[in-house]
Length: 324
Length: 194
Image (cartoon, rainbow over all chains, first blue to last red; front, side, top):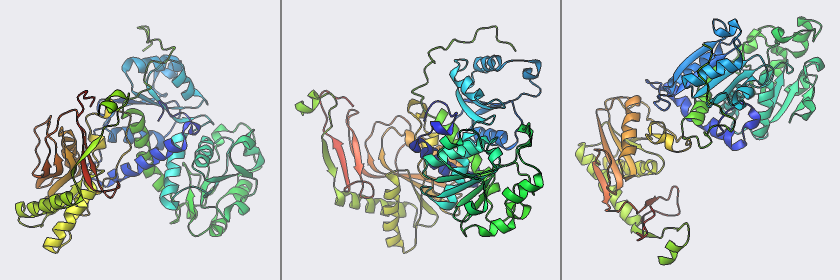
């Protein structure tokens, strides 16, 4: 593995399979009386969350704690960020505190990349979602969940439906699943497909029904109203009718096909309540698997000797004038 | 041998110390010793340490089952996350941990490994076991004890005591993973590069 996990595109097929296989072994830990391993004792993981999150932050926190790492949670609210502190000064503070890994969520696409490559910190950087760009650990846990239900993903058909334009989950999944050999189809209204989607390793469609028949997994995305600054579709009702997974569409799916959603769900909008609660919905399982996958990522990044862990060429140790 | 030491990365020449029938006899003896020590197989669980401890545990359990006429619980215990040298190597892939249903509480756990050397693997295994449950007793069976302990650990059941020098390498080959059953030792080299 590399020193950072910034994008699904950084993962080779071997890297991705190593993470997924490691996570499979770590999943059995949740059945044990003592759900803890001593592996990262004495290491510090900082959860640096500039954007609201429930499941991702808790998931990373649980993963780090189960590996016995010390966890420092940082959220922008109630920190010096609200006083105007820059990402750089926050990063220098973390470096001075000796963080071994920084898990960062930021509303700006590319913030984790900046943190990893600026020379501000020596720690491993894990992207926990940046703007509308990527969310690689979500893609890994989605692939992990699919593998548990469908086996090898080579040649499997995955349909991702909804607000692809604002979805970092869709991009990370498209990249990772194609690395793992799956055929990905993105379904969205034309206004919600990003520019340049033709260069992605996927097929696209504006019409949901035809994409459902042969797929092995269907992933519904949340309509991200908070990122929408314009009208992307006429009305919620029309969106739901054309792109929502309701009972009628659910019955079209193959017997073994699974229904996924990265959460949080808007029940009644992109997915009906009955479908979300059905036996073939793996939405709750995705959360459980998330902890195992994030443990695998933290273990592989921090657990061993890091042969690449030399100071970056432009690394300048933080000076004493770090803002507190 | 002199030609081997002249090449930059010498491929060590190996000498066979135990062949397939020697290994079979040793495992049969260990199986009987385990039964003798524990007065039967009641409450005995065999846990192999991956990779080669696992098939050894399965083979010993098969012999024990043949003698006792009951199935012997076996499993595997991965110790990767408990190693004390994790930070000296790149992160390793994990091996399966498979604890028999019913757990290990109040059972007699026999750890099975191929080679006992520094004792650090067994220390890690004891730590791992501690997180899985609380066995009534823990015993250790190894196919080869090559000496050079770095911790106060000894085996209860030993297939073969093999005096070695630190520059030698001991290799256990098993049908499940290799071409044949054999225990090999590198022919010691005067230049002695590990």
